[in-house]
Length: 542
Ligand code: VG1
Ligand code: CO
Image: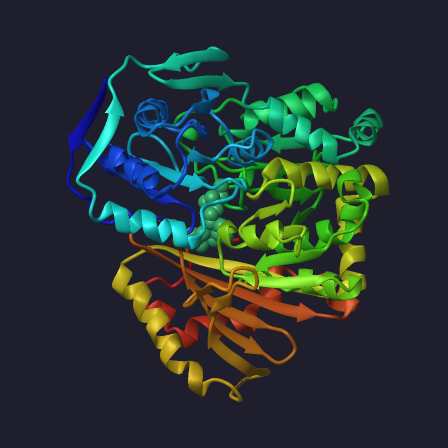
């Protein structure tokens, strides 16, 4: 029986950079999940009888929300839900399954790199039929709906057994519990030269992949160890845990420090990598060298033709605005398009659908291609492995050669986390007020060329997105960018992105923070960051 339940709107159900993210206790309020899910279903047109894909990163509360969504999908008239076994699906796997099975859309349950557990974070995101995050037009409509919602509909039924692969009926809905890895693994096999990667491992090449007790464990065990022959034990923290073992499943130098230390030490394997909570990010570290995500994007774009899936070349590269301009140099050399979008993968979807961009990336450890419509952590690892299998050079040599060819974009992001919202706003307001007066001014050796509040005009659908970050651009290619995070769940996070271009190979061996020192000082001065936030130093430097 379908029950119609009266409800009242909750404040703040506004999807951010990547879906709705809140603390678990917020989601646990009676009706909170139901209101948001009903709001999604209410704005979808033509979903009756269609297929929905459902899965999450296995964090605390995942299993409960899976049951709610299944019963609400039954009430909403969907025909079929494909749910990952155990309620698990990585974000890129959701995207792959939507595309392969021609589903109407999908729901991803994740707060990505944010910590999990009873006091941790949870999230819900809707993806459309191309496999990508819903564009702003839809997320705005969902948010508007959350403000007026008066009832939700749910099927009264016992919970579905989501641990056994197979098909069961839930009212008129067919629930198909699928292997979370199979479709994704098949897609990877179609893109990469698995024989060449197998030969690489047989030659004595060693790697470590840190799944951070999050969703990529099952994928990495199956693909890297069982299929490609990486030595057993290459994948560590490979069992998804509801609280990620109490850690931040964020693959950066702070939270993946064990991997970093290993790769910098005497026992380093040839290649180190990690992914995040929901499997869409990647961290790449060679023996003795961390590859910044921005450099990794440029390197992958420059070498993608070495993998079968990209052998014909790539049509264009897209990067989020704060991502370094290293990729721009590759695009210029190849004579292909380069697109600069606001932060968040949803802005890449149109460019990928239109065939304008093939490879996309963000400085926040996200890279991906037109094979799905999400960023994809393991995909990046496999493309790296395919390139290493073909080039048979060390990561450090490949990176050094890249810098010699294109120049080096020194790059770092400084995050000030859990700042009171008004204090973070004070920094941004101060910079915004100064923008008109900055061009032409000099600060030591740095001369401002331009300064603006970044706005994006989507060349495919003509939509506009304003206020996407404040840019201070210097002569010679240096940049300082200020932005507030749209994924946090406590206070505000101020992000300052700092970049300096260095063409001279004799100066490519500097330590990053040292190479950026004058820009770092200036970035803090311009925003009076210590005065406004009360923080002398950022909480995370990546
Ligand atoms: C952050 C990153 C952004 C990324 C987003 C979602 O957003 O900066 O590049 O797309 O997280 O990634 P923000 O608004 O906090 O800067 V994930 O792996 O959390 O889905
Ligand atoms: Co993620």
